[in-house]
Length: 305
Image 1 (cartoon, rainbow, N blue to C red):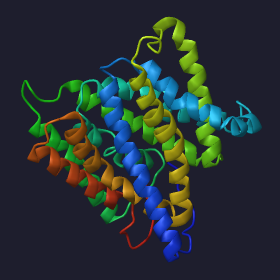
Image 2: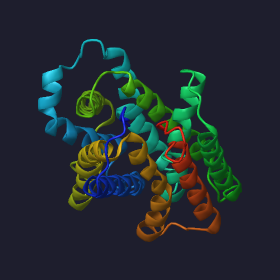
Image 3: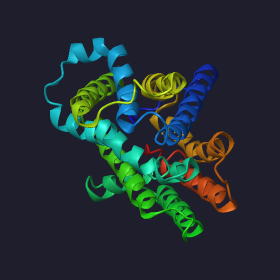
């Protein structure tokens, strides 16, 4: 996620538009979790979903990556990390983890842990020093994950795949975040290049893994085209950029605190997943931790991940 370097001057209109944009992004992210969870066990496979997720934005943003070229000068190192952290490799890893994880728990273990992973890499690799409130947010995120772990032990609970693969996905996204911030690319250029290179990787994988597009139900293909390609792959990227321009990066990132709760509620309503008190509490605690970890409430106003 890109972060704005300076705080914009907020007006009521800009605040309203920015808030609506950010809230829409959160709902799309939650829908993406639910949609991916729904489809990994149905007619479409992970490669099919990845083709939709990156192929549609790659086509729409073709003028952007055509202008920059596939090998942008001075940005290839960060771009490789960006593709690994948010492109096709990231998607395949997350799809594998989602096969074994309810959307409610995935909301905590993936987007809930992303800001923590960003902060840990920033501290250990880049020498960043978060303030007390951001450290408290990181502790809350860890507490939310621990609550989910303790509440889902036993034969019927989550397995090791959920607690290793999805946090690894959060770490990959953190790598993408730091790489993007140092790439010199703007939001459209970064999104376009990640999507086109991911599409190239997906097409290269087709002879080895095949596709289910010819046998999957038409309704399923239409649903995933909407949620994966248009909503998550394209619209969420544009709306998040609008939120950052209107609110600034820190306040826009603060809205991600809602994602774990939205994913938990959506999983219960749309996928009939059990929603126990431990899962609800873990989602709320993680969401509060994400809010604190952004730095929005810090006196120094340092932007969060």
